[in-house]
Length: 620
Image 1 (cartoon, one colour):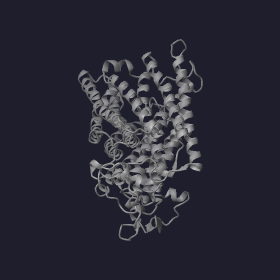
Image 2 (cartoon, rainbow, N blue to C red):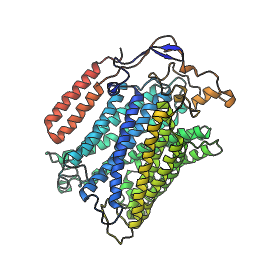
Image 3 (tube, rainbow, N blue to C red):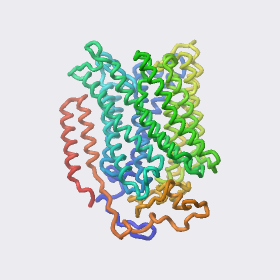
Image 4 (spheres, helix red, strand yellow):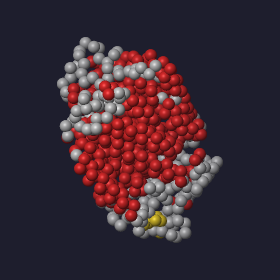
């Protein structure tokens, strides 16, 4: 039995203790799974950052000797793969897991054990891909895996197999999570929370989930074809010598890869849409327009993939069509940016660290968007393709966009998850170091690209005019590393001696701020009733109230008995079966490399886990 503000609430959860390593390994609590996603993906963030630092040290001076060409190829492949699939996507999933039930007034996700399964598949996939360093070398063909660089004829090692099979496993995690969030958002919203009353972050999560369930099967087909070409069956999907087409890979990969860009950036847009109104003390300007712009981006994202292929010879008609669609997709993005700026305009601004990171996101994302528009023109794209100009563009979008917004989310929701405030002084130092470091690192890449420096070269001769800017970029990467170190110091210091946050340190707008920090296991003692958009502001200040209308008493759903009728709150018990099932799936994939007998063992374990999972009682 758990006590909350003087009332007794019975919580039936799991037979094991709520504390200790085993309780974390068997947890199905969406908040704990969100924390696990966050910690694990941040570890991969550090790994990917180290890989990037080695790349920059290699290129700091002409004729660099830090690593040889083969290791360089492995590092840039793993850096990109790690940042896209093991950092930005799962860091977004960390926020999805922790926040979505809290924002919609639910006690958990629709399928708690499926949620745990998605996490353990993600862990296994990340470890599997990185273990390639120990078995003959990591993948070395780029994160895009272009045929025929990935064929046995050109790439006989197992690194490409680790990459392809690992991504197949990670796709399972994304699909499981996506179906879970779709069902949760559509079916488990609190009474009164219509679709057009949902927080923007919840809306963007819903759009991303639909993108994932349509995008992941496409890359899965391409990866299976790639493995069949590399297998003893020696199929010829991408082998032109026997009737295959290497351009088919590009169509399949980028038909996944460009919706993937919006899978990476839409959660960031959702975070910013929550942070800005809170610290501007204004509702989000043009809420319906921002919602529909996000949905429109999701639809339009399927019609622009071939702008990655302007140089492959698709012809003037195809190039013209995709040039127009690429320019047109800037419209909903511009709608969002103007609405964010209008939200700030005339607001009572409070420049917290979270606010600074969100404003930094807008500024850097505008730069990345404008450089992206130059790629919409096939003639200019011909000149920029495969130069450092492209590298500059997507780092301004994904680092200046996604990473800055994710850090904004860290600082904004950290007190809700831990009950402690991060130090604002260290936070602002973290922000300024990161914003300066990223501009020093990625800004000069525009200049280098326009001066003809190709991407994916491991060294360059002196006298090309590239030395100064490469040195500046390497210095900037070290400043970024310092900013991340400041963040880690902030986390460690405040976890021990941080200021208590209380339930609502920012005067929040949405339902997660109406409950204690950290939230109880059951989230809401009584399910809240939503009266409008910005539900918690309405509860505190009234539909038309100002500060004087603040309730003196705590909100009704932070106290009271379990379901309002004295009955206990039934919560699903923990289970180790999602972990077992994920382990079995990973063994199946590993067997393709190490022997098909291992795939058989993995299949037995996975099927046994699924059978036991289906037979397991949901709660005590």
